[in-house]
Image (cartoon, rainbow, N blue to C red):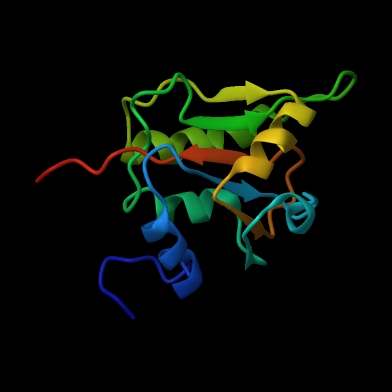
Length: 144
């Protein structure tokens, strides 16, 4: 165990976060997402909820300040409805760690898939919330 690092973060996920450069993206995908099909690197975090992983990741991970939406979710398909509680739960975590982050962006389903194919990694979670997927864009680590 390491001090100050969430035990929810596997060694593989920690190594992946470390290897990412600024502008690289990581997708935290719900349990229904085709992550194995979409991702060049697909990690497993079965049984974990996306908000809990966000709590573990965001203290270690700067969000990109040079893009309009460093946090992006999938928009609802026509005829579907988003559960506003899902985005609200993610926003609470983002605000706790990076309160100046712009509003969470929304991408149409197939645009979200296309962006996922270009992402550095996909983390398959146990999230069961419909449209529970989120993309994080890594920023530059501030100089201390």
